[in-house]
Image 1 (tube, rainbow, N blue to C red):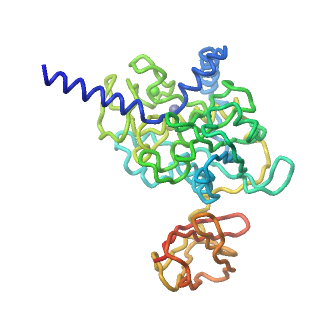
Image 2 (cartoon, protein in one colour):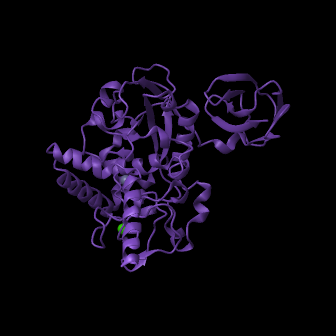
Image 3 (cartoon, helix red, strand yellow):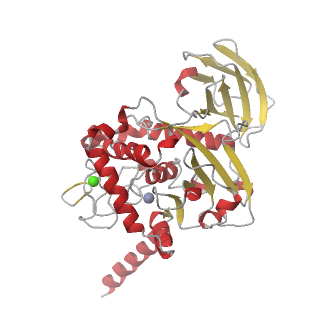
Length: 399
Ligand code: ZN
Ligand code: CA
């Protein structure tokens, strides 16, 4: 009897802890919308039907487009100064998106061999806009302070930080979504245009020091929803419900934390290391080609204006190998030397602190340059290398 009690107690603790873990807000969003009378099921069924038929008729598969670049604007809506993230963190998040949506993430090598053939290695690129809709120069980041603590799940969010025309831009709001939601991404058609986009809790945006969601993959997952992907197990936790994607195995339920492969349900090994599962950031690694085709079809059918624009913008990552800088030594105490081995030489460099404050700057005109950093207080700094179109950021440590 006693051991039953212990087992029951452990189970109860387990469920309690799991219930406390913040998660993607897809279910929350659907419930909230259906309470307002929005026919969520109907919208989803019609959406999936259209994407399915587009994918069946080969002509409309958009993967032949040479380059898909989605212009992004990031709205930082902050209550505490901690939530007012630096530009560097935003740029890092864009770089993460570019890696993860193109199979360029270094941890891709951890994908189990049996799933390697399905990895999407080319897909969607993202860049921060450099021009507002009115033609003014911008960093692609807007900042708004608010008295509201949990602004990310309130209608006021869209008054405080209005969306830029969501047909032309992917709007990402970085806003506190409370203790239970990591973020949300809106399906096409589910909410009005002025609310279309993605919301990510500032605690989990870019590289961060949270334990579970520290690699910026909440944004990856939510953009997956924004481009029409379901969770990999479908909508219900059983073997009937499916995500509509052929190359993701049928999976009964979501996974948490970081399970070891293999885990099997519904008669096959589960692809829990997919970006559309609930595992920790360090363990989600891939989209499949089937998922990528669905996302591209969603863009083509539902969000085509994202591509049909000549908006100028900067990517955090796409040219990251071009300057290819080595920082010597790192950590550094006196003289910092930067050796460039890429195929382009940057025009200038900047060193900033964690808050984005410029500490020193200079021109670059050779493959190697040095600067004296002996006066800098110890800590983490960022070296920015840039020319007119490229920008790279390296982390450096001053001892
Ligand atoms: Zn989700
Ligand atoms: Ca599937």
